[in-house]
Image 1: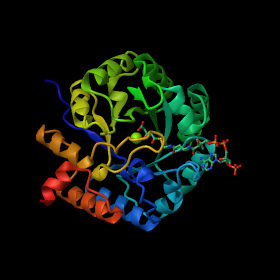
Image 2: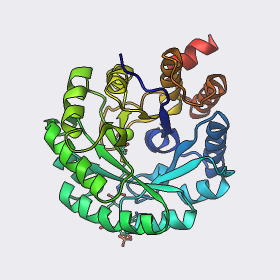
Image 3: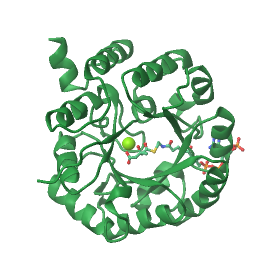
Length: 299
Ligand code: HMG
Ligand code: MG
């Protein structure tokens, strides 16, 4: 069985997690503290913020303040979502190291999420990617609804491949494949991945698995064997998606690290420290810890 020796974890809890927690109008200081503690637990890639319209996602309104308050480390990559040039300008002012543009493989999801078609979205991302690269930032691409769309149902793998290819062509260093509503199972994940790798080499792909149906780790395990070595996860399994009703958070970072540790795959994350962060943020939000490993370690 092939498995990578090392996996890059992109911690998306402070963004994907907190953008959809009902009680999550956390102050910038609390968010900055969360990000600092995640970095101290060994997470080197942290999606810290989103420069989107505050009316659309009010939880991300204090993004600039969050980035001002974090204690920066040169080995940590702090990134933010930027849907358009206005978002990029705000991100540049806030001093991020990396930005992410986010498209979708389904027209309805693209409209609900970013108020434009897939093609319009890609056209908006071109100048964002160009300007970000010129400013010395790294650019990551997301494709949402890679297996199912909450409005349209099953999504054609060839559409995911097309959008992923377009994101790579505009200079993204990696494309993260989002199972936005967490309905994917390993067979369908692999069919999607096979179509995408006809266009984009597997080393440029990442998995972004929401865990609504409890399939995230299984899907990740399948992708690992196919050569994917970059995965997004969210401490304590925080979050969901404001434009995907019923979607639960990403796979919990604690559960992902536990599985990877068990497989002998290096992540650089200290699980015991991470577990404490996950429990503390769950307590702060008054929610049940979404990490099974977090609950087990507490018991
Ligand atoms: P729009 O309304 O079409 O934008 O929104 P517009 O260009 O027509 O401008 C309208 C108003 O928005 C103007 O203000 C602009 O200044 C303002 P007004 O003149 O009316 O006062 N505006 C902005 N303000 C702040 N920051 C900006 C910005 N852009 C325009 N960047 C837009 C288009 C994309 C901005 C909007 O639809 C939006 O913010 N959507 C939020 C999308 C979002 O954050 N979704 C959640 C993240 S994606 C996700 O979770 C999926 C992922 O995790 C992967 C997966 O799970 O699948 C990544
Ligand atoms: Mg997501």
